[in-house]
Image 1 (spheres, rainbow, N blue to C red):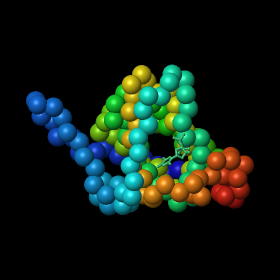
Image 2: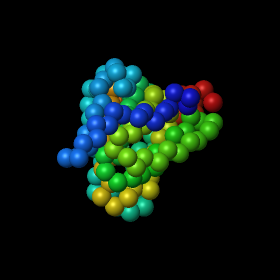
Image 3: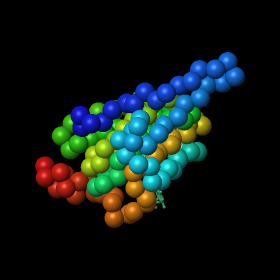
Length: 133
Ligand code: TYD
């Protein structure tokens, strides 16, 4: 849980419009194998609700806002993302869910692994067992 952190990404301010970027092994401690994004989330819906055995990720609210709840099996912490130049770094083996999506929000996830269903832990009791809690 102590490794979860909000990363303040570089922001190049410009009267023509601002620009931010992220580099693997520099701003984030992993190589990017995949990126995916979540959009058109109907009001009140919850995404996530699982853990990954290996996958590390950076979650960015490219547009709009949402909350990410992180749970290590003992404590829970909620991070509100509402700026495109902040990324939430989530190490492996934490339960996480995303909620309170604003209208037209866009969540981008940079992942350290390719998609692999076997990496998911979708059952909370199995997650606790995995964490040996
Ligand atoms: P899932 O990760 O369970 O969604 P969330 O955690 O955001 O609620 O993924 C939903 C579905 O999409 C699931 O059937 C797997 C599929 N999927 C892929 O095929 N590739 C991917 O990179 C991702 C993230 C999901």
